[in-house]
Image 1: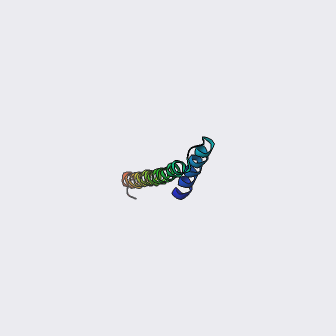
Image 2: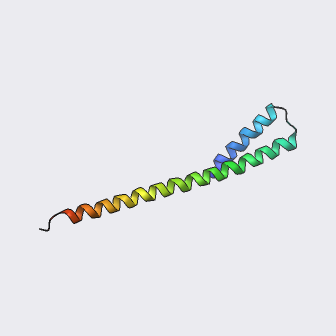
Image 3: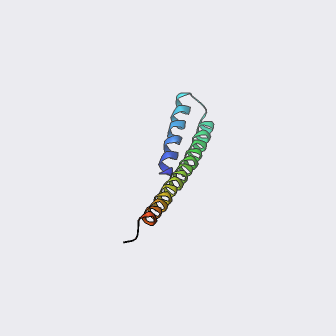
Length: 74
């Protein structure tokens, strides 16, 4: 997924540079920078989502244990 996001960012930067009639070296440099920034941003976003998912899973586990402890013994 990060590769796809980085590629889309690079393509958008490349198309924008071509339409703005920027010299080719600068256009390629900007698209390469956009690729790496998009790739890093997507990696960070995945890490954040994984951490949030783990925290929610841990809360459900803790809530389940407290409910079973509150029930009276049969």
